[in-house]
Figure (spheres, helix red, strand yellow):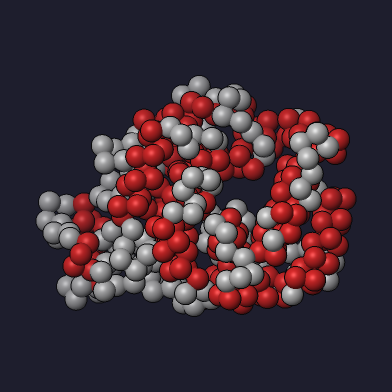
Length: 352
């Protein structure tokens, strides 16, 4: 299969290079074709990224307090609640920082550092960052999202990032995965399983919320997609991605590849494995393969073979990978880029 992967990477890279946007071109040259930092084409791509319109729009809209504007309707919802980090402001920050990282932006540009500092200012005493959907319990998958952004912007040596990492490690369950507290364990108890989610959440936020001991629910499997979101945060940290805890998490995902998730609250159907999505924080088979290969899982791990064969199979005849729900010229470039990066790492090409 390595020979086929080599052919696919060469052919698709050549075609993508001809049409790619500046940031896609940069990552293609850097991470797929492994060009040296002084390569003229790579240097040109960096310059083009600096003036890339979507990147400039995000930087211009980022305010001095580290937040982006949200719609008035969503502002009103936040104002009726506890306020950030609960609400759309925090969600927007996470998503836009993700995009800026992809667009080859440093934390010293514009107000990016202010956004990162704003997120860390919400950190609780135990290390997690509350929100963005509820104050009733912490959400490991969103904390993994925050960790991914912090690590991508080189905040991995910040002691606050370390505290977040340690909290996530403490939240790891015996089966190696992660789950959303209450929603993916207590909710299955007989007295709650027939409640509407709206009513259940109201109960959890009330003074009558049930007692919670994670050890009482260890028989319930973790959530594949929550686990993947946490691993995505860790895999961007060179010092953390190979820890034994991360290996346990990767094993959990690998052993459940292309299978139905246990939890209806988070991508229940196995079809999510074979749906091509972008951005990658929406869990999918491609997202899982990206994370797993970043963590060092390649052709020597037999459990990776099914996913890689699927990835090669869904490549179009023109050499590109396309979003499953509807084509998008921009998103399809990113999906193709990630597929190529994944294949290169899996096959151990160019020194990986």
